[in-house]
Amino acid sequence: MRSGQAALEYLFMVVVALLMVLLAVKYLQETARYAMEQANRTTNEVIKTIRNMMKEAASG
Image (cartoon, rainbow, N blue to C red; front, side):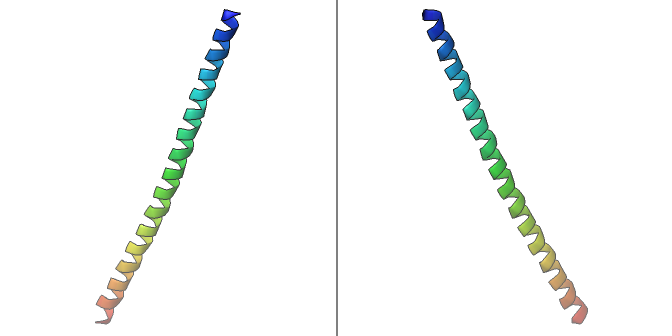
């Protein structure tokens, strides 16, 4: 009886550890996606600013 309880407790701990890992991976994926979107927005803004500066320099 005691070894069955120990095995069940062990399995429970393994499941909890796997859930924690899965949650951490999901969080990291969300963070990476947000960082990539922000980097793309910033890059596009920099490109737009440089193009505007080049137009102003060429016209005036």
